[in-house]
Image 1 (cartoon, rainbow, N blue to C red):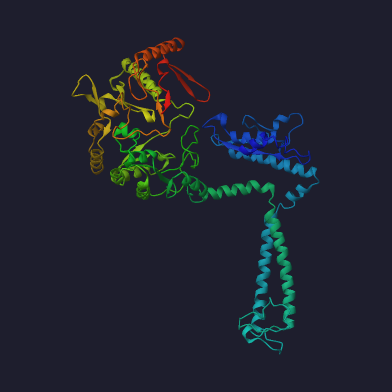
Image 2 (spheres, one colour; image 1 turned 120 degrees about the vertical axis):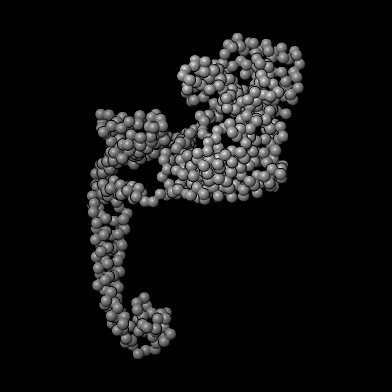
Amino acid sequence: MESLEEIENDWRVAPEPLRVEEERRVRVGVFGMGSSAYDAETVGKPAKHVFSRLLRLGARPLVAAKPSSRTTTTTGSGKNDKKSKSFMIGDSEAGDADAVFDQWAGGVVESVVGMGKERGGAVVKTVRGNKSGMAAKNKKQQEKQKRQQQQLPQQQEKEQGAECACNKETNTESAGCCKESKYESDACCKESKDESRGCCSTKNNDVHENESSTDSLSDDDDDEDDDDASDIVDLEDMGTIMNDQTLDAKSAEPKEMVTKKQAKALKKEGYKLIGTHSAVKLCRWTKHQLRGRGGCYKHTHYGITSYQCMEATPSLACANKCVFCWRHHKNPVGREWRWKTDDPKMIVRAAIQTHVGMIKETRGIPGIQLDRWEEAHRVRHCALSLVGEPIMYPRINELLQELHDRKISTFLSDASNLNMTNTPWHHEVVEFSKRLLQELKALREQGGDADDVLPEYDLACEHKHSCSVLLARVDQFAVPDPNNPTKRKWRTWIDYDKFQDLAARHTADPSFKFGVEDYVADTLEWAVFGANEEGFDPTDNRHRRKKKHPKYARFDEDGVPTHDTYDEPLPYEEIIKLKSMLEQKKMELGDASTITEFKSGEKRIEDASLMFRGLVVIR
């Protein structure tokens, strides 16, 4: 599509380059596929674009239209009627793909035959003259094999009873071939070293000459017929051939998920492939924390050590190609599992081995902390959040158990509906989380049945770099602070050693039960929501690649900046000035937040209290 667009917009290319002359004008037909299960408006959209662009380049629809209505040759809406068209779409969700294709193909064949009649019947002759091409080819092959079988006994008799008919000098090393022989390619050859073969007479050569000529003629004829029969396929038989190929494909054994082309693209992106459908990749947060540059949000929220975390997936395939996905679209796509299935033990074993191998390669990276590098050789966590959809793997439960048996915790994550046009700032996420808390509180106050009361939630942790906030249940993850009973002490971190022990006891004795309260651990102060560190581990050093820093480090309750980029207090005069600007903005927008949603999916949050939070400076 990009190439067609470039040709259409290239000023160096004449308008409608596919038109040429009216008799030689290119005619096109396009059949598209799609599924209305995702979006009925986008079914077959790429095929629509290709067909419409080809028409703008001067091509004509292949399927002939009635003179009274030219518009019936194409369909712009993707809906198909009983009339064949140059462009049609099959909907896999509706299950009409085969019927629509047969309808489209019938119109194409009819149009091709019609054009052949207009041009002197050449196409008609090609199509109809070879209607039994495959049968004729098989018949000629059988006749050829029959002639060869009849000639075989005569040939063996001649070779066994052949005697040298000439008394001239012979070459004993080359089996005494006669010098007068005109056919060195027959049984007697001067270069032949087969001592069991005699010298042939001229008479025998004459016999061979006739037989060879006859065989050569018949072979050539058969070859020509075979070529004609294989090169020309009856258009009326194309549907049968395609159906046979489809049945063969369905009856074949499951294929490997990743093709050679996909494997090459994935390897180029840094993926290490395992088996036929799995992969591992070194997460950037793993490398960051190995260098003391901070960990990911899982480290802040749950206490997961990023440099001991392995990022992997047992399924490179995904059911979608979402435009908002931060991953690339070089992996396979499928709505159900239809490929070979690798053993989960093999996947886990190879994944750990490959991951540790990649850890070893990081030793030469500047800034690597050797104590963390040595600890990283032991995998303690596995984030099944690589490209693809892990739960598509039919043996996912066995794979999780295999990881737990090795005392490796697992983390499954799902995709979001964000893209680069609507990715929020951290302060916008915080504002949204506060509004969500208000809604949850209102629902909780409405009450209801005792078994249906909504639990109480509150803001527990935040990780500014990932623009993430953790809302946790108060009854499960909070206890009164011993130092200040009026405040809560959060316990969102996990005691992984204790969890593994409890999980092992449950595996050995299914009657043994345990809950989340049995393995929680205290959340460190720097990870709690509202801390000055904003989720960044103070034992690490913050690294800013582009030297961009927030213009203001702290704000008051109204959103007025109080500290500059160096975390130094702002002068009183500047604070008053910024407060005046904020008040003016509130007069324009109001006190409450407003959310505007656009057709593209972008959501814009406008709140006067957030006007200073997204500002940055370069230093």
